[in-house]
Image (cartoon, rainbow, N blue to C red):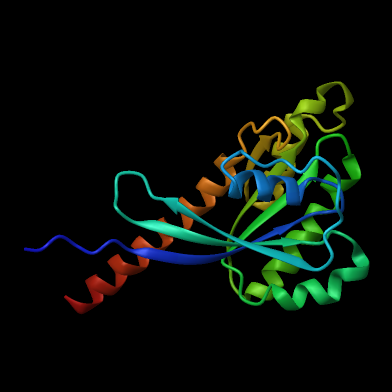
Length: 191
């Protein structure tokens, strides 16, 4: 029997959160494999797209993440939501030094889910662990918020390039697992 062809899945991953929480920095560090951290702040206007392939462990399969880095300013809200049509995954970011940015995460996730029209995999990401002396949100508070949102929680530092890959890899693997489950269901129906 010939070897199965590698499967390449494509998933739309929407990165959301308030302005200045580090969405673009996280996206750029992940996309560049840690080689590019933006030195100066540049506000995202609208949506910036990048694509990154995540290999699925113990397989020859992969998930291409189409990462939509979205503006965090309310004035762009209507425009950016047009770009979110049918997302597969949500990456909700807040700043660990800013409690208000965590409070906004429920709203951001609800907006993305409304555009999905179905349940989607999502993560809550606390960024800026490098600013430990200014930290305003404890891990326990963030974990409780994530549990309330029914999502996984990750902490990272885009600046120090710490744990940036983990939430993206988690989402890619969750998406692949969902695909595998759908294949199994389809195969069992056909038998």
